[in-house]
Image (cartoon, rainbow, N blue to C red; front, side, top):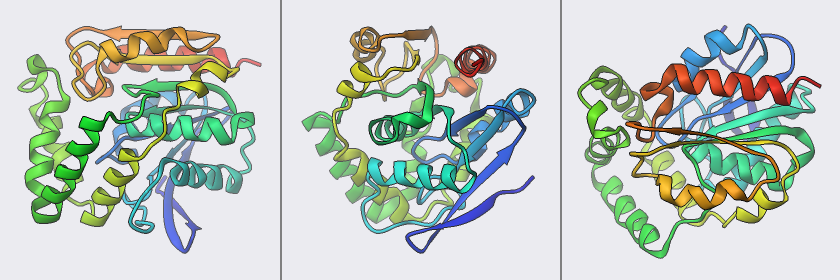
Length: 267
């Protein structure tokens, strides 16, 4: 089944719906699209109704202005769920998708039965990271492909870079199709995102945190204190894995997410 599209602020937002039953929403990360979840969906759609959304400026979704705030992304997700008449779901977000998931949880908590942060964090950018974002934005304005080719291989653990060379090349090829405006607007949005550790503290549904010990984008060490924040928190800590567990530890991450969603949605 191909992607459907709806309007949000005069922009096209693409999403894919498959399977039947209780709903699992999958949100991709920066420079990605719904395509990262294809391997997961082929299994999960046999047990759940699965919704995958191309966030603004990614995949087949249009850009929306000059800054893609996490709050705006959360509104996009809400608009898709409302269109599909979905009232409750488990939501899993990879990296930036996790930032959007927490922004959604802050505003639309009544929709959630469980939350998975998949190589993601409730922390905001540090001052140093914000300066890095600004430098990156300047680089992207001049030469987006140099940035894409440099950043994507470094999302993988060093031991996995050669092993998953084909997957890395595919991620680079897909990211190269993104409009420069989408890359910049998303970088601007991530740069100004809020500290949402308070959301993790207040959340009343189970939380699953998946972390890679060799993740340089969202470090394992920075996630450890966050494990203690939710009332109910489960975790999967992966050795020899960087920022892309859906590739580097495909079977483990799929199984853990499946069991987590099944547990959250059993009622």
